[in-house]
Image (cartoon, rainbow, N blue to C red):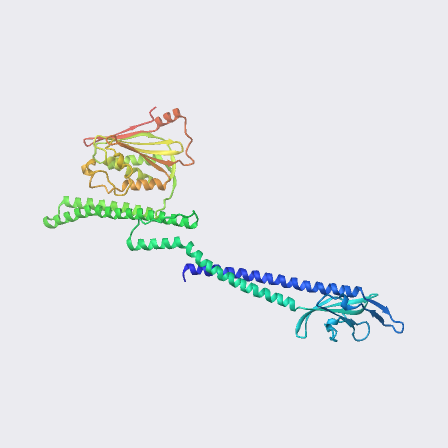
Length: 502
């Protein structure tokens, strides 16, 4: 069964239940009101008859004589009256109205002798009637019972007509609701059918450019169309990224695999040699690093990589990263200098923050020519700790600044050092961007071709970070902090440690 039919059946069934409950309530209230009207008319007639009757003592016996009015004068239309004496001996019919004059039996024999009014529904001549038996007293003694009867035929006919009207009316309303539901659902579900048709078209043609147009109000269906369009835009972007990702991975893996196969062919032809083994080892290491980075980014994409955040001393991490940068530089002729170092703390993951710094330093080393300088710094800016990594390298073209965080994107090979062209997969800055986002931070870039590049990573300070000192005290405190740099010239390594500067 389709959703449309189920919706109409649910709505019509619910409406039928409401109509049924409402009909039962109306029927019950009307039945009670009609019965109260009959009882009230019988009670009024009994009161009039009793008030206009007298009981007199007989001169020849101890019995009382009941003087009754003409019952036809006081009785309402459709109400019959009997008076039965019950003061001594068996009940005797004293009088009756003309409309039940032929009836010599009590209307309600069980109620004769009752000292309180008694209402009862009885059957008289195959007709349902309502009988009221009221006591007539004199001097505190029961003299007679006045029994009044009224037919319930009119009330039954009224109830039957009500049932007929409610049954036919309710059925018509339910049928009308079904017809109206078919028409309204067809109009209301039209956008959903369009969405389904668009999804089916996308499945058949793989056309992710499909978008839906909505001219109606910003209601639930309008939001559904908007969400569908946003989903399609996101899917199109993800699909494009996936296509580019697969193409880039294929390209990046093809190079080391080709190199490994070539060296294995040389070994097969000419035997084992040290150069071929080193080349195979280098390419295998490059592939292993690439796979590790890809797994890291893949886990980050689907949320499978949770970071354990702790309070960190950022100055300690920066010093450790600076020392490891010497190993990354190898035999390069570079100056690595710590320009500014303030004791700041932040909430983060030590391993990932250190990875962030090493990736930035590795990027700076790769794109800085020999004789250049790489600088590190840590300082406070408002409520943020700023980690700064700068270089005096080749810089980044203005048109490339928006793409440097894309996976596998690499700058123009002509602007890179020749020995680094085949060693970088283009994933380092993508990992940096993910780490910054995972720490709720921000990364800024200041670069120009030929004037170097500076990355500034802003991380929220931890709550227990000391308050900001006045500018003069900050300068004196910074001078007391140790600064270091290393200079490598023509294979000669020089390290210098500067103390508190006092």
